[in-house]
Image (cartoon, rainbow, N blue to C red; front, side, top):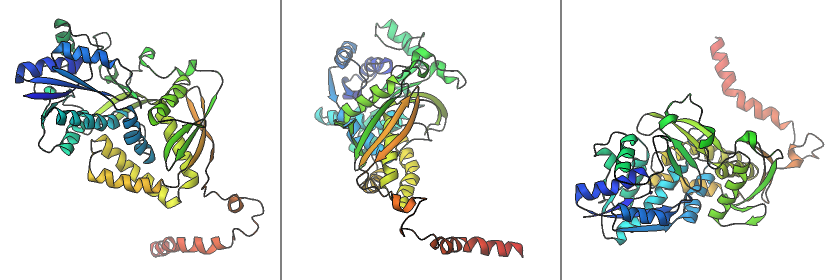
Length: 397
């Protein structure tokens, strides 16, 4: 048997390699996806081989991740429960797409992952895998083995000389990609405990951020970001640049208690510097260019879109259908938004668009030169009040 393992180089998946070889007498092929986690994947390859993998494939999926997953979610204004920018939720389907490509090349329909049986990632990996191969066999060690905690895994790794980032001194889980860094578990499981200041990796403490604000201009074409401060950039480079700018000014932190798909509440701390800017800037340009009812429909569907992605249904007919509608609504969203960053704060300070629906001659409080007849509002209000007046009359009787 040959098993393709989604391998991160971390604690869980390093232990998984040896466990799979022993339990299934299988050859393990590791798959590493570069989605911008800024880790030494060549070192991860060597580590996978040292742990017993027969091969390790590394895919550079950074532009793919940002272009095909992050930008569509920005166009959809997708933020889960109002706070979480879906960093992990968007990365997993991208990784699955690469992993299933490796499985096809290795001519196997058996895959494995290191997600726990309590989290969302197990759902995301497996739903995505079934989309690409309905006959795939999925091995999930956390739902099979005897280890009960990450502390036991740490002890196992130390006993077997497996180098890992986690330790009993830093018992929280970290997930990184171009969109975010997330922290959960361990000391963060107490929702009333403030995260330690030294934990944050990509955003400055707002109190120590520069004393002068920083303005940044983000340009969009049909809802997708294309340039920063007038400079055209490829997707990964654009998000990298925004991460740097926002991170320096302490923008993008969120401490969230969210509802996992499996039914429990969990606490996650997130850094999404560039993604926070993208969502703010996109809404700024959309406010000029989207028709009112189109935007209302988009915002209504944004909750459903975010929920689908969070629950692992990126690869689904309903998400694809929503995407077509969202992208159609975004067709006129071309323009530039200017943001001001200052000590963790983010403010929209200006926006322009060649197809702006904003009409100064209509909205002005000065002489509108006949562009708007205020007397029209009388009939408009009376018609909208008809059902209210009817209900009030019945109630009065």
